[in-house]
Length: 75
Image (cartoon, rainbow, N blue to C red):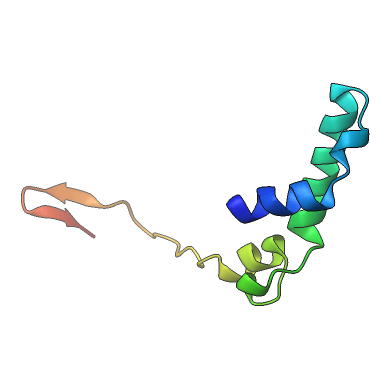
């Protein structure tokens, strides 16, 4: 998070904004750019969106509900 805000302050020309709405629009646009277009060395040279998609674990389908017993949860 600290890295994001550092880049935001360096990259975004926020001092030219005349209204809060203009600033919010610029920040929203930068967030979209940062997440979908800006490659990150710390994320294996992928964008945050690409990294999240690549690193999401595959969810396994549970075929039956777990039954709770005194000794714990069993399937």
